[in-house]
Length: 392
Image 1: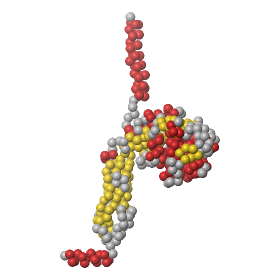
Image 2: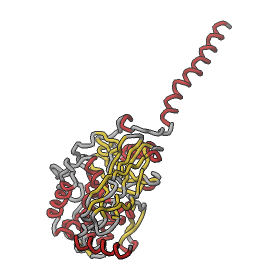
Image 3: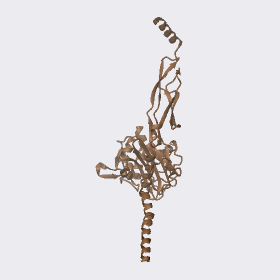
Image 4: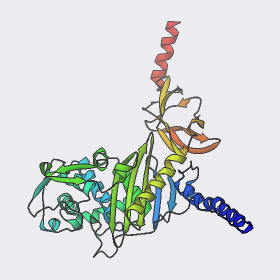
């Protein structure tokens, strides 16, 4: 009986403490992410590099090895799309234009819509195919139509990258296929920079947020390669990519309320790891930050020695990303002289508006004169004096 009692006690001990030992890790894994004020302190993500950027201001909220040049796979197409949309914006091409497929474009492998040599398709349908289905053949066809050849287009890609300050980028093609590429690289930071430029175009976000669509009059279906669009609340884009050299990459954009974020993951082991890492990084951003926005304002100041008694000045809109729940504590301090002395030119800076949060400056914008304020001449001043004499 004594031995039996000891065995029973031992079993109870194992059940109580053994269950706790095994249950604790499970509960930790399943616990939701808590609000994060400083995401930089989080453990590293399971990828080669990553970055989280506020889309409105370009403020970097988190980075992990964000400057290393790495092969980007189809995320390359962000720059391809950016140059195509810029050409549309400038009127050099139109979304309604018809593009004829070259033999080279039709020969592209990987993700494609199986263009045939000589097949025609509108610029808009090709853009849609690149954005949603990551069509390599359409990327080349658009490049050739926009610049005359893929080589000329790639030169423009590198010029644009340099203009945007993408210091760790060198493109060799338009679609990211890297089986023959020697130095086709970019970094997580550079991808976020060009993503921020691309999402200025509503057409891109319209397509990048679409889960399923079609081309060729409905005969060919398109399914978005970015599953976050369907499964992550607020995700509205942007571009995925994967090759054996690049691993699994994504530039994911998402918006909740007034906060819009860009998350880049490069070199993940597989698609699921990539998507989980992107979702975690976006969760950190939405849990830890909020957007502050000031629309700007017009003010009136008295003038001295001017043809008009008052002048209108204005400061531009200002935005910042701040810690969650702190936007209401942002203070606005307008620094202006009591009066303005003529002459003044439109656009001339006459003061500053300083934005502070809990006493620390988070940004400032200049106060500018909205129109010319000429200096009063002698004869004008003399006429005014005479008029006042007669009136009195």
